[in-house]
Length: 569
Image 1 (cartoon, one colour):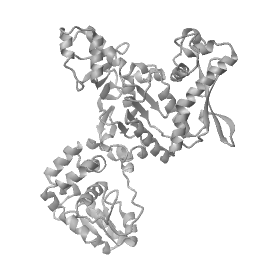
Image 2 (image 1 turned 45 degrees about the vertical axis):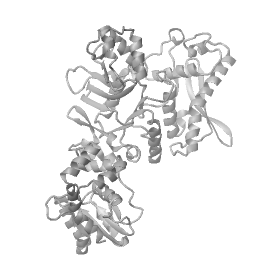
Image 3 (image 1 turned 60 degrees about the horizontal axis):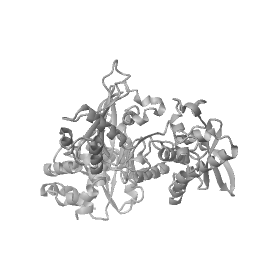
């Protein structure tokens, strides 16, 4: 089963948002209080197995800015593979001559089922819209879909910390009551660890709950042996993975590889510890919180992944919701974290909120996958990066702008073209790569705006063999030209080139004729030409050559003045 999209209606400040999961990694960015976390929590609320997570806080859907509330629903569009469809029809036990069989037998791998959960009603029921199918059959279909939904896990880097101790209620051994405290998830994890531990005979006292079987054991040595088996399971599943990452040289693995996990127990209280043998092979014991931030993140991530009771047993077709992942890790660690997420995303879907440029590396993620959350008044919207326009554009998109900032400080030697902005860099770099109009030896360096090139010019003047600054022929470009002439003198006049000086307000993307503009927009699924060029540069590398080869004569003729100016270098 695969979820294609989520639709959120009237959840907190979200009136209606549809989040398509057409990418394996789906970053959500935006300024503070833009509603990024609300999107994640609404998706979590779709999964009834997570209703007790964090005391069910995510199920509180009312918009506090508005008196009264509308009906809140979270929907998922999903598809089943052929085997799942056959299993569904088989379990329905409907006759082949029935109307329902006739309807359902026509479904295939492309048929979309929309499963909806209503948070406004008691018990948060699910529903499905299927014409011609009885309510009884619908109920069976709903149960089948729910039981086969992808595993959903939520990670909150600001709230998720390993507790110093995890205490079970005093009546747990008799009533199996986990309570409703904030550590309930951790209690469920401990139950699952004991359940999966390879301990012979642990289930003889209680076949359903190995933890209770353990707590009922009176013999101290036997309890110690059981804990030893549990620790062996923990180390096999978690520390072995940690050692693999250490061996690979990942920089967020900033801790020893000679670690061993320990779980201690006194009465109804459990604690996770770490034994470190890295100092002259002497063993020292630490709380998890005393280890590096990288190890703390790793332990929290892995234990919730491997020992969550809802985990299906294989790391495939899961949905991971991460709120500000690695927010307390240093920049190089966040870079490696993104690589780890990319690895996990090959068989799973990841949705995460971030302010970090290091988690938006366009060499790892697709720019077209980025969503921007924005709050206007009391309403939250979610838009694709390619179509996002806002008065607060610069603040909302600053992580992306930082992520796209190229390392041009390596060398200013040779012949240099300084562009007004990153969009010009994209277009000219692609033209340089696939045409003979721009010499391969020329270096193209992007500035961050018409008036932001003073530093680049101050480096280019003494170090480059020759250079030119390309500016839009608009008011900002003309003002920048005057600014640089005042700063560096009239000799710079021959080093500045305004695009198509015969046409006012002319910018680089205006060189593209209408036909090529439409083709670019269709190729990159965006109506913003500037972002289209960014998508073409990063997301559609395999389409660049074909796009350039099919540029119209009109476009190439338009660009002739730019090509000629660069050739003068």
